[in-house]
Structures are given as structure tokens and as C-alpha cells.
Length: 192
Image (cartoon, rainbow, N blue to C red; front, side, top):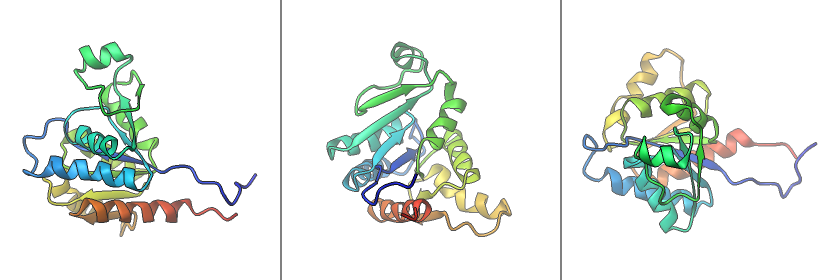
């Protein structure tokens, strides 16, 4: 059955980045917050790994802009989320407790999203990027914030997968979110 012409689900955009941000640029958290605000301004839903650092600031920005923020947790429960993983509860409308630890959470996080935006990160962010890349999801790379964003272009080039038009780059969070939404729209084109 084809959807009605008025059919439109909100886009789900994941913001991936480091929980510990000491290696990030001095303005990385401000840019993360702006990403969250821009995602909310486009009436999309922000999805994060329900963690601290870069994703936390994106969630904060989304909530300050009256957006929807969903966290995907590695924990089995709220208690484990807070006590064992020492992760926050604030700035999220809902947290999904996967019980899959970080690797399983990363897979669910990227697969639940329509697109992934990569900010300053480390190994976990790189893992989320490679999952999204292998799944051919639309991906946005926020330039100039440090960490993983400094090597992703080289990783893509050295992977010998050919030109990938589903990855866009920008240092401006507003422009990057707009580029990512255009990729989502292209991917989701449904003939009605």
C-alpha cells in the first residue's frame, strides 16, 4: 500500500561524537549544541547514544529549541544507565535501554537513524561512522571540531569504495544539517 500524499514521518538524525571531549576543538561543544538546535529547527528528531560530551551538548541544543531528543543506551535499565555506565538522563525525551553494551548500542543507534552526523569523536564515533557508511546512510561530517572528523575523508579515500555521494562535509552546523536533510529527502523519495 502506497502512503497518502500527506504522509511524512519526522526525520531521525543521529549525532555521533566523543563522550570525553578533551581532544576536541575549543568550540566543539558549542557547535554540537548548534547541531541540536538546527535539527530541532528542521522538525527532525535528534538521536544520540544517551551519553555525555558531544552528543549530550547536541541533545541540550535540541531541547533548548523545543525539539525531540531520543537516547539509545548501552544499559539494560535506567539504574544501570546511571550507576554502571554513569550516563545522564537530562535533555532526552526518551531513552531506549538496549542492554547490548556500547558495540550493540552503536549498531542500533545508527540503524534507527535516517542519517548520521559525525562530530569530534574517538573509536566509538568511528565505529558508528563505519556502520552508517557500510549501510550507505546519509552522513554529515562536521569539519573543524577535531578527533575523528580529521581522518574520515582519508578513511573513505583509502577504503577504495569509489566516490560516495552520501557523505557531505561542512564546518557550519546549519549548512551541514541542511545538506544532510537534502540527502535524506533524496534517499526517501517515494513515488506516490
